[in-house]
Image 1 (tube, rainbow, N blue to C red):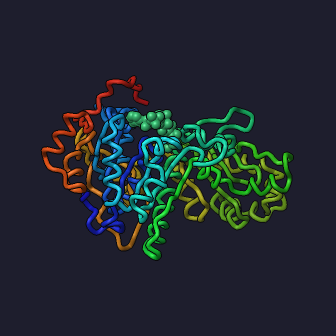
Image 2 (image 1 turned 90 degrees about the horizontal axis):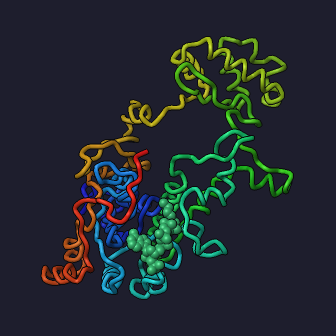
Image 3 (image 1 turned 180 degrees about the vertical axis):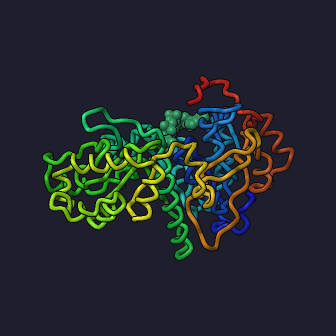
Length: 419
Ligand SMILES: CC(C)(COP(=O)(O)OP(=O)(O)OC[C@H]1O[C@@H](n2cnc3c(N)ncnc32)[C@H](O)[C@@H]1OP(=O)(O)O)[C@@H](O)C(=O)NCCC(=O)NCCS
């Protein structure tokens, strides 16, 4: 059992994890964080392709954070024994998660119908780019494509008159992992009440589209006349609401309510502006947007950044400095809460990783087990779950069904340059 799992909220739940890259592994890493026993089934000869993406010392730097606490069983799926072994394992598991393109699991004989015949109590979760049905469903895809089809990439960042921009963080992958986690958790709850297993799915496109706020309703009302625009640095419907240049950082200042405008005026020591007819309400501030932005920017230009932040926070004006990752991981707040935490890796040593973002009062110790090497737990898993003998395991190794590799040295993939 993974370290930290014994008193986890999902202790005793067993997960067969046929996922790779980010979206799938993020869902199963959250399950592992909660104490589930996660067996990561990897397709030989290379295993999870994320082992090779942006490496340091032959170790995928995102792989190590996405797969902590999992056990690796690596098999050659070109050999029929591999899928047969998965089928033999299914009765021992509560959850099966996969994120191949739709159709791949069926070709392995592991579609939900077949899985259900073997274990009707299992929760099977499929994660895909565009969903398991519909005209786009057979397409492979990654995060940004979900954002593109959801109408999200069009407005996500950048200036109104420029091109769309890539976000640079895998928002959709991790969001979809959370969607899958919610689906699995609720399906487990349903199973506890009724005894019935089921098939659940999550997709990048559905998860991204769910983040659409008011724009979908507005376009339903106004049709093609309403097309949301990229905001650029400042919101157009609320004012002031945007990014201002501080001494060292951009400062994100949000004033969605008139009372916050009054608080901002106090912070800026300009009480006369609070009820001024040109600025007192959001409607007039939006009309006088350029003047409002200039007022705030002029104040910031004349005020040291730390002092400005102190005054804004003291007056409860919503504000944050735009930190880079290095500043974020060093921030005492993130450290104190374990939002960023230390984790050990057998290859990289001690590294910082994002902490578990959900908090339970009946909580376990944080997960303290590293990501596995490829096929590291082949023998252990086959012994524990299927009772295979050493001789059976040796035969599977000899037949090339079981694969192990102590180092993630890419033999077949070009090595991407570090970012
Ligand atoms: C991630 C993705 C784009 C990769 O595309 P792909 O490399 O073409 O992989 P597919 O899932 O379509 O599988 C194609 C074949 O490769 C095989 N394969 C997949 N991963 C493999 C691996 N790591 N090693 C060996 N074979 C692998 C599959 O078994 C399948 O074989 P088959 O065609 O004989 O059935 C695709 O799996 C996908 O769209 N997944 C769902 C969305 C998603 O999660 N995207 C990643 C977000 S981080």
